[in-house]
Image 1: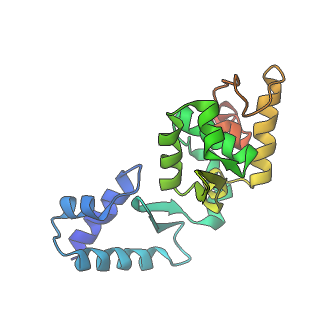
Image 2: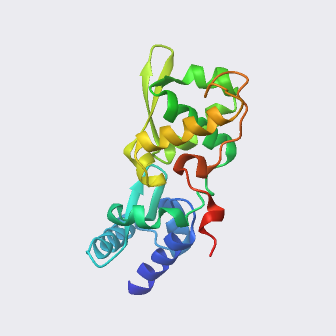
Length: 195
């Protein structure tokens, strides 16, 4: 079992995205869901100790390693947030600035491709949605703040400053086509970190 556990740990470490049970079954050859979940629970307990900087997290997409919350502010500048494309970041920025915001407003601003962006953000746990009449109301989650290592208020201030510097455009309005980058959320310039 220790080799299977090591293989699961390696798979979770290598994957940039959460790994589903079915994918872990294929990688490890474990056919028993109970056995696989038992190994994952064992791994989770091993990483819960205070001497570890990461933990095993469970999301709707699957299992993944993430930095423990108490260390996130110290190391968040090291991640490029490369798992989110420009369109997804733009959608997330609109939600962060104008929340709670109706999904229909996002679609009006960005077009139908935003449905896919919203779905990805929900799967990552960065936003939540609540049914409201014929649309959904979207908000950021605690995971959103953890992901960027900043408070919602700080992120909103950074995003407002970015939008206002762009020819006085109002954030999240039609015709506002500014490309949003991950550093716009954190207010940090990656070039400042180069040593």
